[in-house]
Image (cartoon, one colour):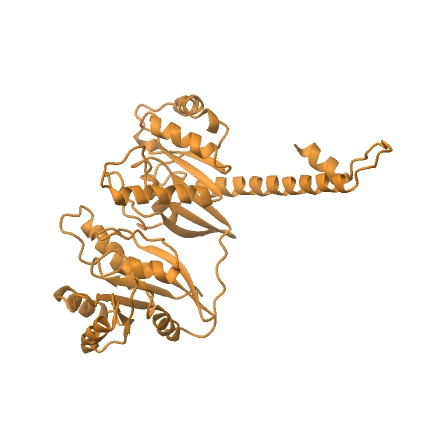
Length: 392
């Protein structure tokens, strides 16, 4: 049985992502005073009073009419609401009840799911008193301040009360993969193809993905954490704070993952920013692979097309020339799940190298501890040291 799902939902800019970050105690969602910052839904794992659940942050159900991805944002939010075991509907205590709030509550009630209204921005006694108006909906009410954290503990108490006492074992993430690349190379499409559904919003416009999104995928006996990152490019326009924050989170994903996958658009020539990314990846002390995506868009392919591409890789990415290369097409669902197979092989190599290094250090320590005195007696290498040195 999977852990319970708790979805945070509501209008734009009521503090959903701030609440999500406060509960997780880390800045996982991008938070800015601008509606529509969150597009895809985000997941995080929470443990409270011996119980665990998955917390989901969603985009506003009333995105800016000018947002190109308005329809997709609503679809993703509604998908997260429908699969939830508990819904936290966030309202703004500073503003009070808005017509859109009434519509959202009415529509959510029809799903027949457990709902808790979260009166956010209750930063002082006056605002906590003002939030009493939300009791008119006849739904359990919790008053919180996502900024200073007051009331969050009480909210979590109310959440875990909804679920059975039996604690589920937390699913162990065995291999983490970060999809890295410049904007619009198809990173989100790759994740969707592996996951088997439209988990990420995709589009032809660069930086459709804003947050670094992680999804758990189980294949055989292995659980993979695949992180789709925002595209990294050399320069950003002044004032594009969302993009700058997204890029920093992408770099963090690269530093903290097990395997880095550089995603290229195989129908285009390698750019200077991709070459720079390749150098950064080679210095990250990680196992890595190259994904030649959009192979279906390569014109006039023949039996030597793959060899020509490999030659270009060696020329443009000399530091990555020995890495595995996969030719993928999300449109045709070609080879995307092979990414997991290659990642597992790379991870095994990485673990073996770590073990060899550990044995080598033990051997060196043993040699130091048993160093002879001034007599000049010859040092005999122990079996562990001989085995490790021979593996190098």
